[in-house]
Length: 115
Length: 110
Image (tube, rainbow over all chains, first blue to last red; front, side):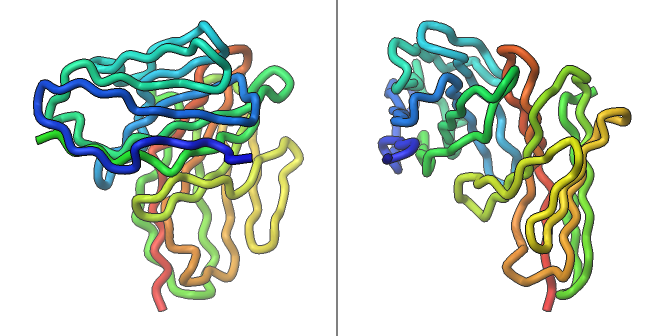
């Protein structure tokens, strides 16, 4: 099992460019999510998905799109990069546990700088 | 009121001390609870799950108080290697989102 993988690990963009951060898991987890973490700050939820074909917004969704066409993949698209989106992005996944969710497994993160 | 609240700290404690963190949550229907550890600029990693009856893992003890809607983490005999940020995580009932607290920073001092 590779667990949760994220690509790329580092990325530098210019303002206005678009790109997709990739996230994949091989654990057949139903729940997947994207967080951003700014220096010295906590995790902030961008988008999440409770299963293939189902996505919903977190607390900071503006400027980002997601889709979940398969259980394994949950890409995050930056539509028009802005310096305020400079951050570390983490993807996470978890399985169902009874009526809730089990522990979250995290990818190693993508460090994004927007100039 | 925030869905999950933690004291951000920092907590500066000497080696060997006992330190406790609390985390309150607002959704009484929450069903799963965890403590995570995050080292600087790394991904968060599971420290321990929190069970209704309370649970212990070595120097770490986690407790859940459903009536008052909080979970706690007790660290005994603190080590320098315990220095990190500790995040509480609350899993919803149903198909809502999992919520992370903003984290409590612990610095263990020699």
